[in-house]
Image (cartoon, rainbow over all chains, first blue to last red; front, side):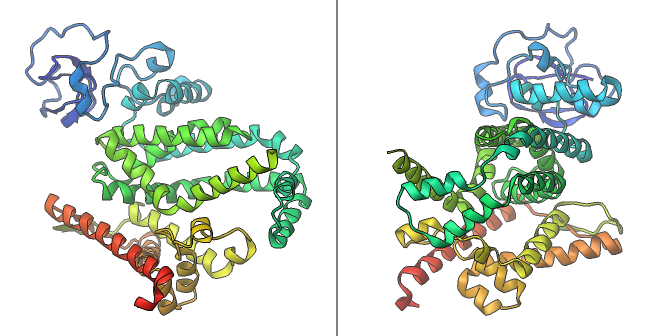
Length: 298
Length: 142
């Protein structure tokens, strides 16, 4: 059905009644429980033509943070009608096309993509999508794993930097001697265990979403946000792994803000706090590694 | 606070996800000595500066809780011990829920109660970090 925002007067498609956010101005509105009513609230037909310009400035207070311009382009067209995400319509679109549209939309038009993702949609669909994307990424990274020299590069860095750590050297030698097939096994294992990991990471993320009051629609909405944010892992190959991970975090923030109907700030806090709290060691490790790399290059 | 008891079911939810996390984590901690196998396991912040990070001691907590050494776990990181025990409880509840269809209560807090809980969690994290810092840098104070 169609609903009209009483604030910005724009009409938008919606599949449910009750309190929700206007996709144009981002303000909270209450769509009355009159399913047959074509335009609500303040039903003033006929509806104005759909907006074609940027969102009003008042959008900065809403969950969509001002990035609510009209959907455009082929990627956005998959969700432009407020329908389910393309992947969840794969029966009518076909698996390949649905996968491609969803992947493209989530990567290149994330704001319009997330508008089409329902918080209460089936989590199994999201899990299946994420699993396929992750497996594709692992398949693409297979050739790199086969030709990877194992831990030799790290040994070289340690040697050139003058770092003398026998235990570390032994470990890296073991990694280097394990051969490429252990890397292949590792890739296969990680792809197999991916669903379990996704469920667990979603649980941790949802705990922090609860902490930051960004868990309005429950655990499975967080799970769906995390699953659809896995799109960048399709190109998590070699050096692109870090980039794809960072973009996945960005997509998770956008998705969490949309599906939990909260602000981007709260979504960012919920997503990034676990890293800040528990992975600060990893950050320092990165700095130390960068230092080692720098000294090796000199 | 409102507590609802649904009918017996096996519908997975948040508690089940946390339970799976707890079960896997504690099993790994019980049978795989990660810190011994991986030589660079540890906190680089602590190794380079001497100051612990807020998560320092969590590996020891998991290892000791998995071996039922609760005083040792508490000594390593008190809040981590509480979290590990809650994860263990979630694992038990998950088993009961998924195997025996035991219903899990649905707790709904008012806005005020939710704010109070959040404040308590943040306060506990700060106090815990203070304890970890004092234990690492100023043990004579304890």
